[in-house]
Amino acid sequence: MMKVGIVLMLLGVGWSSWIVGASAGTRVDARTVPPVNAGQDTRSVEKEREKVVMQEISTELLQGAIHRYLEHIWSQKVKTITVSVLDPAEPTPVPSGIVELQVLPTGSDDGLGRRVFHLSVAVAGKAWKTIQVLADVSAMVDAIVPARLMKTEELIDEGDLKITSIRIHQWNHPFLTDRDEVIGKSAARPLPPDTPLRAAFIKLPLVVKKGDRVLIEARRGGLSIQTYGITKSSGQVGQTIMVANLDSGRELRAKVVAPSLVQVEF
Image (cartoon, rainbow, N blue to C red; front, side):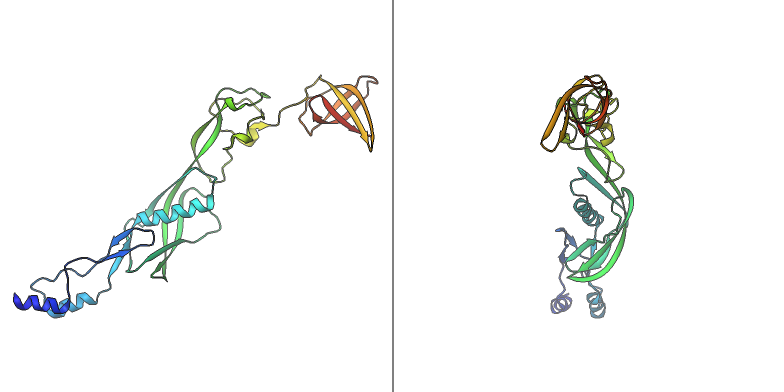
């Protein structure tokens, strides 16, 4: 036993495992040479020591790299992103050293659901290999929804809205997430409560309605002529509607510029 102990001391074989770092900040245990048993001879010990020390990239590290990549490219479009790695199911062995993972762009990064990612792996600052990862990706957004039933043409106020989290099927989703895009608009159709709003569901409010008495203004250069008329249809600011001149009865095409004010060209 004394001789075996001396051999071990000369060979420098210890009993503790080596620890190596990963680029994502997680420290993982490397696969190391096992302790020497009394029955091992010097030749087998040397053979074990010649083996390359390996470490493992866990599925959690792959998941984190993909998650950070999607957060970067999707910016503020979504609230939360969930990534679940399906394959590889087992840790990936790599040589010892600091590991850096980089997701390679594919040119089409708007997909949710089951997707394939290619990750470039560098060890100790040198490119090692590219691995393929199959992952399931899902995302949630905070969508604006009506808090009550909104009728067509009804003006939408802040108190008429609330926020709800919904799962989306593509990152470039159609749902409205900014209250300022909705407040002051009107419903383009009946809107049941808790319906995620889309741009097509709202519109600019009508500032004149059919049968309203309006001021008709005609301008050319510094000349301005004004008279009153009756609208033949409803309209928003910027729309062109028909109005009837109260004095002549003549119908004119006029542009809505403000409540109770339209302009014609001459």
